[in-house]
Amino acid sequence: MAISMYDASVVVFMARLKALAGVLNAAEQNAVERKIDPEVFLFARLAPDMFPLTRQVQIATDHAKGASSRLAGRDAPRFEDDELTFDDLHARIGRTTDYLATFSADDIHGSEDRNIELKLGGRQIAMPGLQYLLHFAMPNFYFHVTTAYDILRHNGVPLGKTTFISGGQKS
Image (tube, rainbow, N blue to C red; front, side):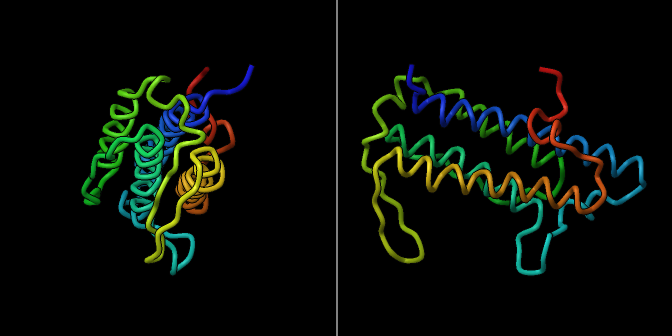
């Protein structure tokens, strides 16, 4: 049995965003335990030329809703990038997963051959849906989810692979 484009996209995005919410919960709890201002984590970066945690979460959610929308032939909702607190980031993840829940397998079915057009770096590119999902959307999504995790881990939040994969929740 072949994996469906829906299972390879929407289902994965939803699971990873749930786990990202668990990572953020762990950071919030750790900030309280260590008496650290949450802004230390929220605006931390791995390197001076990288985006802070808040922006990593914003971009990860943008990739999840954008990729799913493109594969389904829909326009993605636009979210303002104005999150300043953990509650704001959780709300953004919630809005994204609520949006992802509006997709069905039928919405994404057949998208592996759908022409996906993007404007990148001032130029227009196009590729089939499967290539877009596997070689653009997923790598970008995972980069930002992983970078969010890494920022927090680098700042001493006791995270491990289990938290990254499941958000610390028992499966």
